[in-house]
Image (cartoon, rainbow, N blue to C red):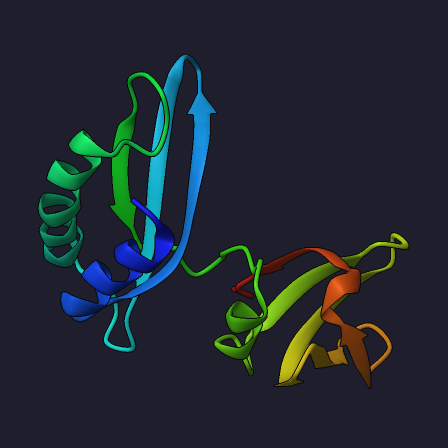
Length: 143
């Protein structure tokens, strides 16, 4: 199943597709689908989407061989891999690593085109980062 079809099926269920990943844990392959909603993600919604998608994946599997399907929320601490992820994370705390190795603990202030404006908590100043220079980003929660 292509991502557009997956996205449409999830949106028809009142949720949004956040991301997908295929991982191997031990000897087990897992196809994970992360969903979001402004109202939060419930176990019932994850179950509902699993029941809708599972039969389609039986016909058009995402990987060769056996795998387990998991549908869940990306969580409070989640990877940011697309410009839309950054847009949807404005005012959240993020750890960012750039191509040159520079690291930031920051707050996302705004996103325009491929420019992300952050407040660097270490230097206590605003900075602009180019999305293509970001190699790793993840939200975090301060307790």
